[in-house]
Amino acid sequence: MAKWTPRHEAPEPLEGPVVATITGGTVLWFVLFLAQLPFYGWFDDHGHTWWLWTCLAGGGLGLIGIWYVRKRDAAIKRSRREA
Image (tube, rainbow, N blue to C red):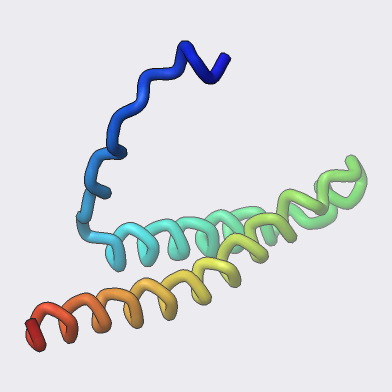
């Protein structure tokens, strides 16, 4: 299979509004968690409480992601200033 795979350089990564994208996704996870919270009883009766906890985990991981991409963005800007 390796001999049929074309060999070429990988394209440059696309840079966009990374902080805004991660922040928007994190807000969405928390909104989904809060929207489902009033229906906890129904989720519990049907064995779907994992939906709530998945949304909460997504929001929590999103907070870590926001911290990470803000630090990354600051490091990129600092590197460009020094160059």
